Length: 303
Image (cartoon, rainbow, N blue to C red; front, side, top):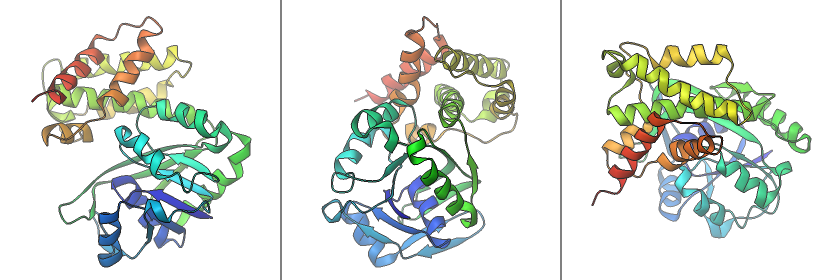
């Protein structure tokens, strides 16, 4: 299986490097500067337990050919359109495996390439690019969930899952990957919305008089929207998520908070805005979601 991974950031860089270590045929699609740096210095991965360097194959957009079985997309959601443009030379064949936040990108890929060529995937990792260009894993969390959305690519999805077996990260195969995508979204929207609105991590929020209650209410809004769209969150998943979202002493926060504090662009439209739209379409009132979204729009529009 020939795999093309767009970008070598926190998601693509880390999981791609682990797959290369396991013997997978992986090529990175990179911008020219990143391509030159990695070809010269390799790609360094820093984890809480080890640091290692690999010498991966990489190409730039003008070197692409339609020779890949699987095309992994892991850009920031606001870079999605540019990502598709950069793949023009490789997208005539192959199945897409997107790891993006929100869900609108799935419909866009379906519309452009057909459902038979679009798998589903969830990447769970806290990682960033360090000042030296290394991929820095911030916690021990590193899980990929994948699944087929059409019988046409089910075998490829299962083959990729098998390829991940010895790659050194946790893996799950979802027989209902669209439910898994919604489960992640309701959790992430709550985490991102609350930690950015309060400008603090889960532990700091939980330690306030009304923090746990507000977090629970926020999660209730996102779950209600998922249910209205045909993807109700199971009680077991709700209990697990709420335990993490209301844990006293937890240092956990969404990467969106880090982006906000550092003055970077955020994915608020894709994680919060799209969720609100899907709620409004079904007549669901979601004041906490709207407050968090409004706060981020104001912050992003500052001069």
